[in-house]
Image (tube, rainbow, N blue to C red; front, side, top):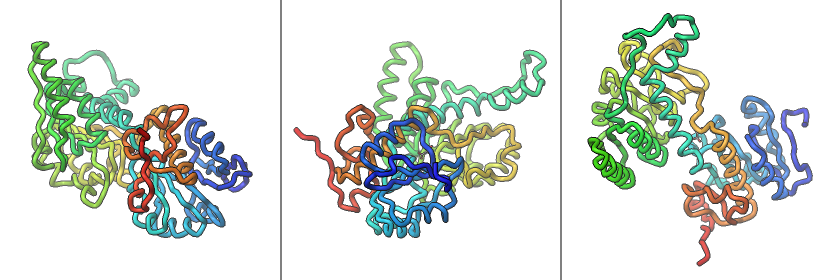
Length: 384
Ligand code: DGY
């Protein structure tokens, strides 16, 4: 352990990689050190101060594994290029904290960790849906406060999910996994909004309906909404699964909340800035039957004033991908992104399907590089 807050592994390594937070498991470190890399890991509980981190990158840094809580902008990539860096991997699937154009301009490949947090995040969205609809967090506080004096016909009544309509905004990988659990598990109807029609979810619902009909149960309905407004006005539960960009930033504000049903449930496990948090606080205050479950915030770890005191909102500390398997797998993928680029390997053509990289002999490829095309990196081809 050095005195400056970094711990060094394999100090004699040929190249130097900086990891800005301790990561779970050992495999990622084994991968980096087996590739003859010196690995400097920041050991603090919070992200290192950016001045300190930048100072530490010079004079030489070949690769970085960083976090979504850090801003990787033009000035960072300028410095990284000067330090000889060739690859930065985000320890996250989302990369709204990374200026990809700047990285590309400085010749630095940017990796992310898709494919291993789809089910984990979808499951958490379901947990938040249930917790909000059935007022689980509020009920837990009620019991612990000693207020439970016996069963009551009117105590903490929530919303039934079965046969309601779930609205999914963004039918990508995570939205799809969430929709499947909700439809298949709770027999909810599905209303989704996405710029593209999702044939997979429509086929899944059609197959599920054949099973329901055989089982003498009414089929569920799957509809693609024409607009977010249509979805908000008609869904009983709305779950957000779009990534953050200039089109989705604050896509749900005062006007959109006003379109929703009086007792709707709103869940956000995507990025905080998609929702106008102050508008949500006002809406929840004036609509006590409205329920919300949030895992992410506009300005993490801070929350909008008043949010913490609302009983109709369940709050989590950004736990979407927080299962041991997923977090260790994300670390493995990030380490393989870095070693793969430093070894000059080609880029895996299908970053959504990276499970093969978790096996004991990963393919000789880089699992997921988001600017590979722009940098002209070669693509891995499976030999016939
Ligand atoms: C991601 O990977 O983008 C998640 O938000 C991390 O939990």
